[in-house]
Length: 427
Image (tube, rainbow, N blue to C red; front, top):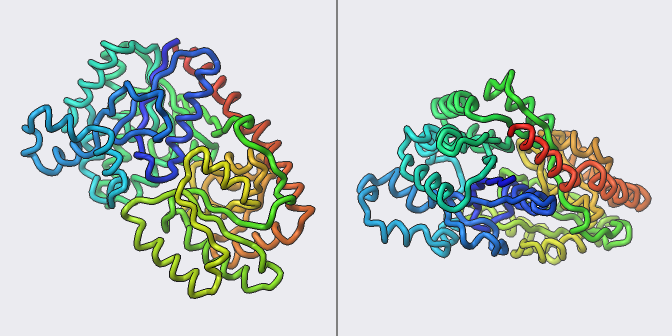
């Protein structure tokens, strides 16, 4: 079976959970002996993925933005368009402010959902021609529902079923103005008819998207995210120096400031004088001021020597991060559909402490490898972290449960087999 995964890239400027999910599914599906190809959109995928160098980046973010906002660029010569779509230009664009946020991109989001009737119809035809010439798939998998505008033409032109993942679309859509938000959800619901099956990453998110997209009657599968346990070294957290880790894009939405405040509160107690805080996950231009504020706060609280910012978060450096961290917390303000950083941490034997939001309670209840702190406040989080770090026996038990939970419940190899079964069921 020949499978195409169409994936929006992040340019590698920050820890992109959706990108990592798609990358891990790709590797596991290949292990199953299937022929699978990644098609990047907007920005390049992770910098270490050299196996995808021969595939162009479609809908190049720089060219797309200029054509949408400055009509004169629609008449730009082909060589100029090609220059804008080179990987170095796109990777530099990924670091800039506004490159990965919905504010200001409402019209483009709607235009993309209109597919062949939107302003990017030419780009869609380019993708179809490339697939016809280079790789005729049996099934196409879209990375998220914001790409549903592609589904109709892909299905009719290539004569194959289209599958679509559901993960964190609300994070993008719900920050838009009310008018744009309503238009986008309505369009996504209408375009759902072009999809043969949806795959959601948690029961929580399945319920949410059925409501927002009116998916009653549609084929929606729930497949928890996962990682390959064999890719992670288990070290019991009780055997490490005490520390807290954060692994995600370092911004307000992901609650970095909540964790920093909780750490400062915890360090006020002499019993936790030895605890360190490791922060990683990258950022974009939008986050610079916010990170500067957090660093200032850390210095003023007198805990600067105990907070370590780790700029690199590629595969090799994430494993170094996991070796150092004994508890992980990413207190995302509005919760998440899953959070693959939780699976990565637990596979390494690191318990997680999360607020009672989104799919976090579902994930922790499934494994027993962590603690829900209740309200997403610095005080509640600090209390929960103190409970885990202050009880070595509890920490050791949670560490074992975290690893076992990933092996049994969040194993990407098992999930990939289920995904391939869904594909085969559609053929």
